[in-house]
Image 1 (cartoon, one colour):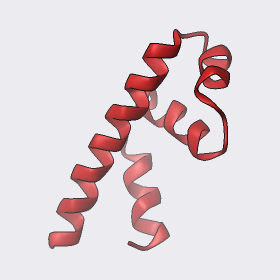
Image 2: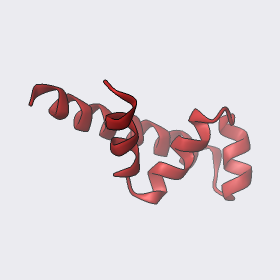
Image 3: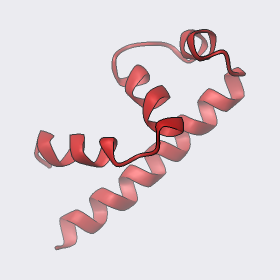
Image 4: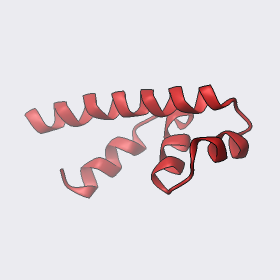
Length: 65
């Protein structure tokens, strides 16, 4: 994939998923993200998990075009 497509896919996520996922990509650890966003650690883990699932789906569809 080109960076452009990946960035577009990430930007298409809703903020609830995009923000923790982007922070994770920037090098933040799960517990740091939880502290900064004032949400439980489990919430951060599940949001990043769902963001990955969503991106896999979007990028798989893109790749098949």
